[in-house]
Image (cartoon, rainbow, N blue to C red; front, side, top):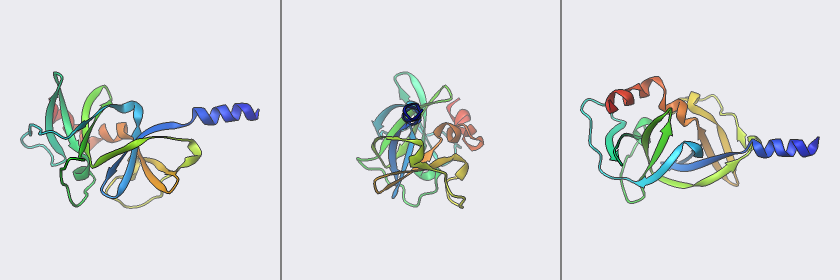
Length: 161
């Protein structure tokens, strides 16, 4: 029985792409990531929310670009050589998120991910699936699909249409 439990624990590990926004480190499901690119100029869309930077043409596909620093109300938003765009494939849509930098890909087991505490923050806690710990690092695990398909992100549909 214990051998099966070990296999079940292995099967429950999740691979996450970790990235930074300000001083915090976040993790998203690696299976949602299509590619990682440097930040390029975008075509702005009139009357779109501030967090939608605009759109880019990615090999013939128009991709909305969302700045996660603005979305999460982080104070300073600066673009430099470390700023990257993570291209996601979420809910059968391709979209990009701007982050401060990509850290690495990590595998977390279920016992390394603790439930998120109830707190008031810029990031609505309903999008946080838990807090992962690896060595001395605390990683905020986000359900990126839930976040990108949320009601306020319906504006992405309108902006890209």
